[in-house]
Image 1 (tube, rainbow, N blue to C red):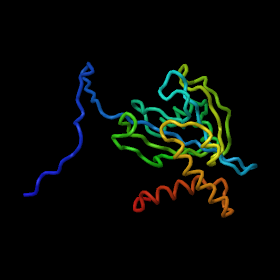
Image 2: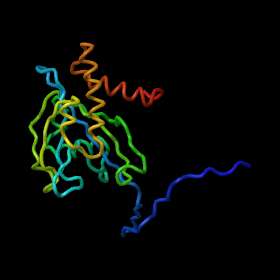
Image 3: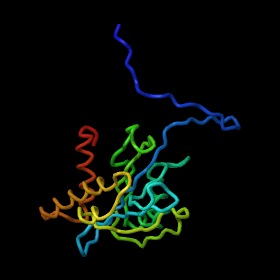
Image 4: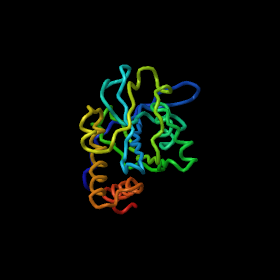
Length: 207
């Protein structure tokens, strides 16, 4: 008989939450929203980024919209909520107008236990056909210090200091756009093509 496999894990511990409800101390699920808007006139893609405020960790650094999945919430709806809370952008309304696309499935899932706080993070690539106005009025106090649309290109990305390695995510997207520009194929469909090729590269039998 072969030896039993060994697994590096700790079982989740149950806790009595009262009222007959049991909860577990399982790892948290987070989302990252890579929100990209294409400007038809300038033929440039811009990404929504925010500088973290004094009430959160990594204060002063820049990041993509990110947050935690709540109870009774799907991952795409967590994306919609966090984008509204942190940047004031109503993705529901933009989707209804045909100006936004929030995919049902994430672009990538990061589950490495060595990652930030052992979070399991689902990254979503959100497409917009316009750059709506941004506001922090719906965010928690001192959560977001500043919001910007930045061009998805190596220079603008490198000019900011980043949290969570979000610059690496944008840099890969920037390289794809640069290659499409060189080939003369950069257009409103470039983000969708990146999404498809990214998935094909990582999950070649599942797309």
